[in-house]
Image (cartoon, rainbow, N blue to C red; front, side, top):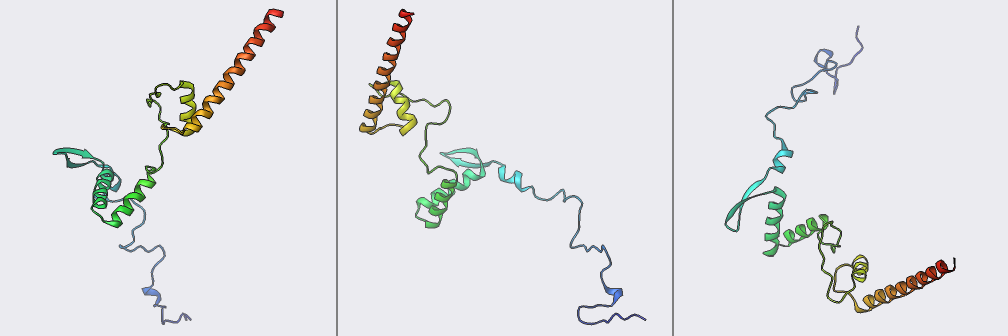
Length: 161
């Protein structure tokens, strides 16, 4: 006969799950329901809100950050902490350098454009420290004097053959 013992966690064979048995609670494969919510498109769908008395369409993230910023300004510490955290993630709390192509910068009056270029690349936007500015000007003058000497030597060598 059969030496299978029925007992605790051992149901009779006729009541056990059959191989590859599927229940209604755990369907496998197939497509998702067509009427299910598409979260990705919902997140990117613009919202309409009033700004300055006009209705404008904005991204949901902008709306959330605007709301969070307003709550932070009213003194809610958690909102302020979350707002600053989101600004840090977005890189908005780091000093911005002049990296964007097409940016416009007016050279301050009386500043050599070559010196201004070096100062921008090295120290960022003005105001610049006077000692750093003087060091860059002195280096530029030394370089120009050296170039002039090399040019004169070249002309002398050219004349002598």
